[in-house]
Length: 113
Image (cartoon, rainbow, N blue to C red):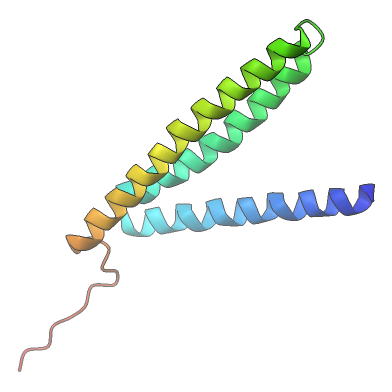
């Protein structure tokens, strides 16, 4: 069972790296502010999760059990509200750029008649 969990975790990390690579390629290609914001937010989410888990691992022995649950709930609530707000703002920017015609790549060529 431990090997299976390790394999699934490795596949999830690989999928995350591929997704980040795809998003970086997309915003380098289109220079979209919305894609830049979504990519940075996704990367920031991963760093935030990693840092919160490391902080809890270091200080878990010094805190009381109820305090850890309260802090975890507050941290997860802030993460959900703030980061999903950034995702929605990035999607709004992408929609706005698409409506303005900035994401038309390669540009369509109008043939003269």
